[in-house]
Length: 293
Image 1 (cartoon, rainbow, N blue to C red):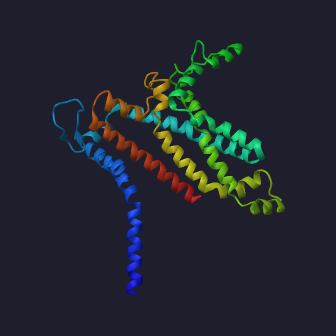
Image 2 (cartoon, rainbow, N blue to C red; image 1 turned 180 degrees about the horizontal axis):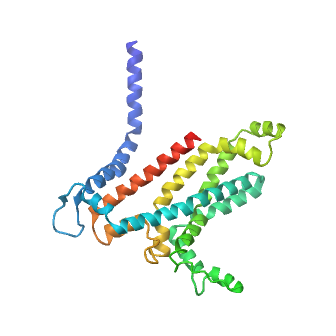
Image 3 (tube, one colour; image 1 turned 90 degrees about the vertical axis):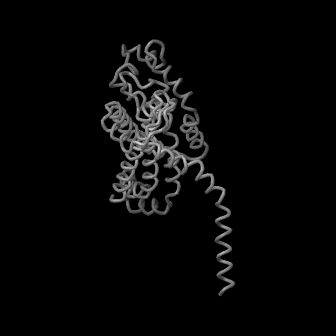
């Protein structure tokens, strides 16, 4: 008994030794910065000031809740999430179902074509779509000119966010499509054969067989999509710089400008943690909703 117990303990210690390098890196590069950022949110910390940091408690959070620019940036972020997440999910699911119906090399080629835009960096994608949206020599208006339509893609407060959401859909839909396609491939064919024998085909098979079995993958993709959409920064920064009239300035962009343009690191840290609370709330609500259904 003693020998078996000692062997079990030695095996446990060897396991801890194997994961020790990862735990060290995880602590140094993730947990420690998170802890420092959280503590920084309770200080008045000016990046270029000679005045030492001063503990001010919840003053940064109180200022954020009374800051009209914070609420405007949060509203712009919520608009982007509301525009991007549903259309990305619907488009990715439609593409995955279409690709799943194809066989052989054709599926491989089309799957690669759908995934290719996600390989581009945001700087390349942003410059490309800024040219597409250009009102004078842009690609879209060059074709729409023949039917006398010239949309204000980036100059209208009502349309600028829609344009950014459209660009994001093109840029990011490949990832969710591939994940959903993998989920479709993992559905046992026996279920489909049994459903076909019972007369469940087309929409009925999708609703009662495919969709319930795909729910865990859908939840995974949707939560990641929501988190990524709340963290939008590159698209708005590269294409509109937050304009027109700050209608596309996301919360992450406001945090960036507060920290590195205004040098208010403590206040920017408080804004970051408020954004974390918003993301956590929406993610938890999504988990609860999907679990109940």
